[in-house]
Length: 152
Length: 152
DNA sequence: CCTCTTATTGACAATGATTTTCATTTCCGC
DNA sequence: GCGGAAATGAAAATCATTGTCAATAAGAGG
Ligand SMILES: [Mn+2]
Ligand SMILES: [Mn+2]
Ligand SMILES: [Zn+2]
Ligand SMILES: [Zn+2]
Image 1 (cartoon, each protein chain N blue to C red):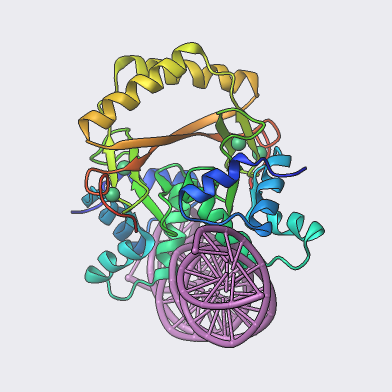
Image 2 (cartoon, rainbow over the protein chains, first blue to last red):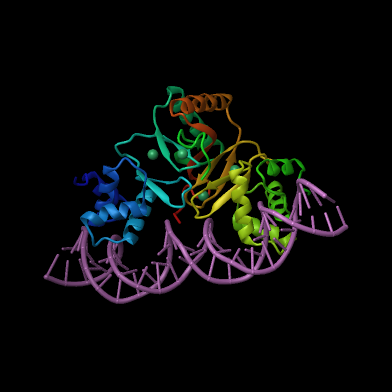
């Protein structure tokens, strides 16, 4: 699963080099549909390239997030989760269970929803002179498993 | 600025006691319009009650969040931020500058926006059998200060 | 008020994700 | 191939948040 060449351009554009470790991280992110943590990604990368260290994974994820190629999320479990922006999954929002931590992707937006967000984004960036590059929406609550049951 | 008595009820309802440290934390949260971290709150509390420890502040914030009286946010600067749910500020969403970390509250929703969220929330909770208790919306980008300028 | 039970607290240690450091290696234009 | 800048990995350092545990304080009942 080789990394598409258009990534090279992306990296060059910001004066960065395309390296094996970076490819490896991108490949893992491309292949998954889960919300991986830095360590998760490190383990996956490690299967193919045992020499690559966790530090580099962190650095790569940071860079990718800075470049806007990767989203960094916090679902409240004490570690960051990462998702490719242009991955297999299209743009989506999240449902997060505050009890067990389960995260559900949700992308079947109503057309109104998309329209409204564009509208709001435009209005906000004008009003606050803000250059909006992304948005994150999370619905919090209890999933079907945790609904009736006890806490923790 | 004494803590309203209705809090006592809230606490009793979950078998908890209303204590000085807890009052102090609530008072600080009530008095501010900022997005304070646990340590920020600790410093404020400390001015009035130097004996109260940081650990207790953390525990109190945890409890309040659990009770649904306080929102816990992550704006990407490595520490959690807290806001009273029923504070001086009404329900609002956030604009977060990914460069300098500035956070802007935004509550002048369009009526459509409110309507749509209720609608979506209803649809989602049915479809995924999820009991939705809250939502968080963040718009990410660069504030007016950071717009043209350099990074970091 | 006084007593008793138990939730709560505070000092301190421990945890664990993320960063820093720094010497070494790799990339890439020349 | 060379040379300088960018990138890497191992290990140490940071630092927000949690866990421990003996001491304290709420508040129900008398
Ligand atoms: Mn997702
Ligand atoms: Mn706010
Ligand atoms: Zn759950
Ligand atoms: Zn800014």
